[in-house]
Length: 117
Image 1 (cartoon, rainbow, N blue to C red):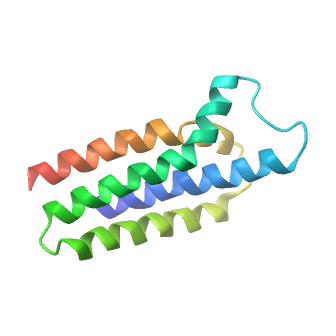
Image 2: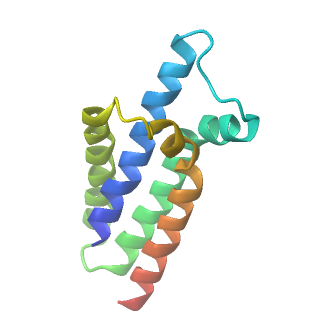
Image 3: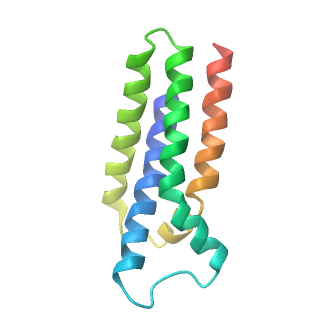
């Protein structure tokens, strides 16, 4: 379950990176709403700062410690690479803007899961 959350976090970060690259590469492409544009610009940076505490929670809660944290980060990287397969999805701009709030929520989910064990 926790590694599925890690893949989902990575998918959001990877989608954000793809959208930000498209926005920066083409003139006239972007968000009409400045709030969504700001959230999208902060999404990739904040997404990794959400994955690192989640990896710490996973590593501190389960038996193997550092190994579980490293596996969590590898699952995040796998989700980021998997997001490249669905580049043409029209929802990518919405997912890119929701990267930061979604990853913050997923960190809280990982935290509550780590406190159960």
